[in-house]
Image (tube, rainbow over all chains, first blue to last red; front, side):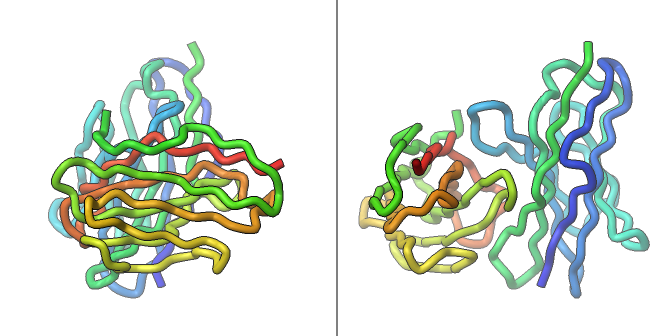
Length: 113
Length: 114
């Protein structure tokens, strides 16, 4: 069965600083990996996805993530944090042939002015 | 606005009661998913329907049930409610049954069981 682990339920960074949200996956077969963002009082929105093409994936709002098979990781980064990035971020995994999307427990990102 | 509508936005009820959560998918989407988001469990997949039929089942309790109607809206029924059922329940829709990356989420129903 596939799973994802998000390290750190809360992350705080200063405005303009690097954002790094960690996600490690477990899967017996090559996975599809996703990052979703949830703004307050809203549903989840897809930020980016990895589906076995380029290992460096660029998403919306300046976010990107790199698939590293050797480290079983798919960390989310953004070079310069903006106040509007404050939200909860979820990593998710799916494997081919299994329609269920499995989410991590989420990381709440706080931006310090 | 994702185009997915969930009602009600907030629901407060007592233990032992039964509630129904409603979801209207985006126009044209045939697949509906239900998720439960709680502080300790994170976001958990409950169940998926595609064009009226159950497609996949996740960590859904026997006290919970769902259905998708001919007009494609879906309802999640929660019965014999317990304090631990308090959570945010999300509905999501997609055009097909295997396109989770194209899921569109509603704003959720916040259920509080007192």
